[in-house]
Length: 144
Image (cartoon, rainbow, N blue to C red; front, side):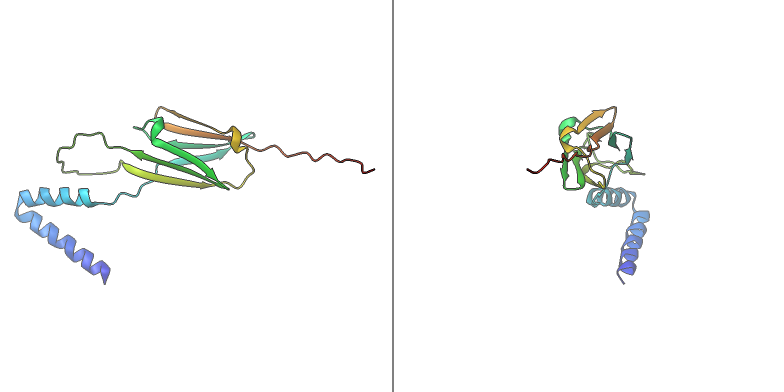
């Protein structure tokens, strides 16, 4: 039932748009403005012999726009990418670049040394490196 209602409203907008070019532009603009963008930047996670590497493709940001934390076994990357284009009205034909707030969570299933992790933002890529935790040696003591 909901799907039919959505289709009807789309048909109404399209039909009205054909009658008046000014309405067409207004409807396009309204649809873009009201769209709730829920986006995640492309992310690669890979493991080397000594560390876990997380690489996020996210151009157009600054280091201060990121918040990176580890909570138990989940790495959380939060940020905000601000749309720096002019605020003038536009009629988009295609929208693929995400702006606004985002959160990416990565579950980690290997023991890591969180204290010695590092992050670097360069050429549109955020790279996080977390060394693998070395096995702890347990010393056996002789009981007197």
